[in-house]
Image 1: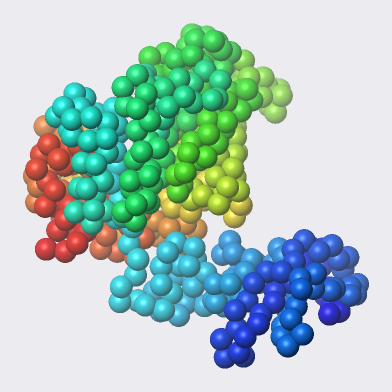
Image 2 (image 1 turned 135 degrees about the vertical axis):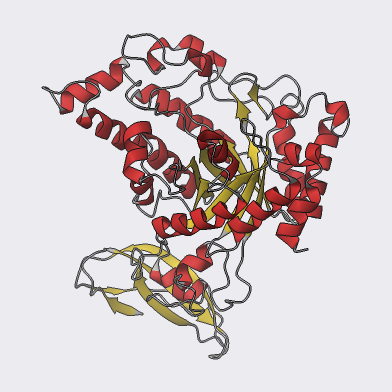
Length: 472
């Protein structure tokens, strides 16, 4: 077969082939990364043994074409996923077919779109184990069986505790060690295995700024610093996103977690950025700032912007890139602060004060941008903060979720996080928890998530989850 390149934005081509009836061809990729300069002709031959009675059909397409900019190459989308590589919204729900395919949604069925129904698990909360299944195996069995019963299809599992170690046995990355109880019993691997046996997805929940004890004690230059030169919040052992060795250690740890068999990785509550201008003033951060702004002042507007850019690129960008390259889902979760009138803070305000740039992360390239983005919209947190139960009730969840979806603007699959937690004097009842969980699902959203299994179990809120996730 001969074909000529006719586009100028790629020199790499792939060939698709199909055998079978014209009405139902089975397409597959038979050759990739064919180098072909623009406006040149190549004579390509199928290297596979082709039966003499077969009449395969071929189609050649530039391998990097993504005509509808949905993260799927046009050829893969058209021939493998059977969706149009041009923008199309078959079910009229406001989402492009290709985006829905990526996020597990049926692009032809507006009546019953896929909704991720998620639950969080922190293995460090299950002590003494005798109260929660009797053993590590019992803890796993209890959590997974409840997830099945309640209609949960995605489990966010905390991968390691910076105080006590990893929840998988014998980690290999430098300075890591396993937690002495459930970690020594390899609870995370066991959890992944049992969840998968029940058709439940597992996403590792990580806070990459939090170092292990060993990493913190052994590497003083990796630490975030306050303006006075002392360690910033030393009890939490926070690492600087400016220090290349610290970032490399974080990325290596994330890669080890990805190789455990999880379906994805979630960067949650990074804790890198502190409110205001309290951090970070470590040597690497200061050097990066003065190199870019020789006449600048630490803590000024440019300093805040550099912190935003560094966190976005060095942490979210790198972790997202490695996660996607391994064929795993990349998730990002952050608390979205509310004002006293119930409105959500502007994204730039949050970025300036914490370093987390929602729009920066949402604008990463397709190779590193999150598949799923979560907003923590916890009504009882703000009801307590502002002493304003009239504005902040379970109904606020739906209103805030609507605003959040608009801000995501189809750049990722939006998910809303709610909690059964007590904040100050505000404790949700089972009905209020159910209402907030329903509010998270009742929107153009790809799912809801709640914290956490043990709280729901201890409070007797299992039926509230089941009612929201399975229906009353």
